[in-house]
Length: 316
Image (cartoon, rainbow, N blue to C red; front, side):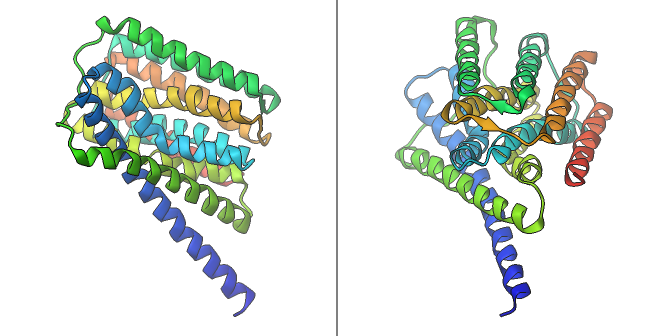
């Protein structure tokens, strides 16, 4: 077998593994949300707690698995790139696509509480990476903010309306599905990091670009499915809230834990994507405020920005 043929087969194999890992991540996260929600309901946990913890973790489980796996392997560019890319993908491509399908209604709490908080922590992340490093102390600080934010939400739970999440009665199958779904997500994350890293080196594309585009899109699949399904059912708060909540959890919970485990250093070219994320966050909150909804026109703008960002990243 020639060197060219061997390289082609290796690349083809890793592309297949990449696609399989994305399917595992998507299905695993979907099962995790469903089974964990039913188990939580069975034990008398409120809809608020389920929505803020189980669902937020479930849709962000792929980002969590990939980012932690990459951090442990010393692949900081994939680790950070996955979170930055996922957040841009969530706010640009996914939110834009959902709004094009059907305008998304917003609320004062979503804009002034969650939207403002998302802007603050995104700029805080930009500040932390000013020296292109995320220290262990900074990672712990991000995690502390996450815990504080959740405590605040729990203490003000009387301000929330009824949850839009509908639960079914838990069965013995959920006791098996819960650990199986977690294993599926972790396994998918491991395969995604391995195959993406191999393809990045083989094509001469930096790990940052792979992490901020392909890996980010793959790990954002659960958010995509959840948000589209929610808006089609008229659950606008769940649709937009899922994406904003996932972005907050990605920065504070996932990237915070990764930084606490091991200090990370990124490529200088990555700072441009961080700046773009800051701009996207501000634009999305502005769109949510204008008319208290994201119109189809605004959705097209977000979608265009999301696609343009992909093209620019691949041209680096």
